[in-house]
Length: 257
Image (cartoon, rainbow, N blue to C red; front, top):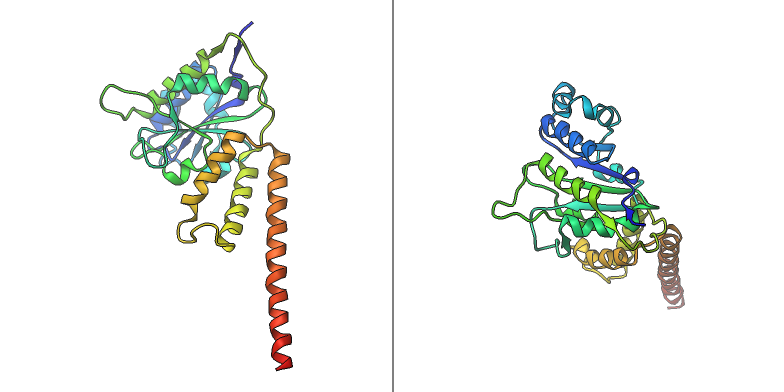
């Protein structure tokens, strides 16, 4: 018996889409492939009549259930695994997989975890800051011109998710820490590493990317995130205590003199 992606645990997120027609066409594409949740973040023109025109009657329920968020972080808050899409390669986009390969990897993850697939704005795609919220990246290979229409890209990726099939299913991935838990942990880790001079304070995110990639490979659970945050709190307490003890000793020495 084969195992497929649990599409009930998959959502499409359009980050800063510019054209309502693309939102509607993306909703229809997701619906065609069995994905019923599509959310949008900071849409430039959320004209409902134009969205519904391209979504057609078939994707009405997807449009009705659509939620608009003020930030990508808010939209991803309760997701355990985030996949970003990118047309550009290189730089911080080091590990990028085609849709079919990524879809296979998502089969065991989808059984117990909420997955988000994020598409950036039509004119420039996801920024490096946006990509730091992602666990993995998808690139759609093309023959020449690398940029696809937003709705076309949504269809290609959703088709890969819909058709992914694992002939010899393995163990499902246990429930992972959600995006909000991870981002809170990374903020705490960055603060500690800057204050103990482990990373360059002028560009801490560059160094933190290596830590992000490391923890992404491990696939942290909520309890493990709590342990790491507890270690950070203890380091913070110990550093502050030593600093205050040093000040106190300095005052004592000054008094003796």
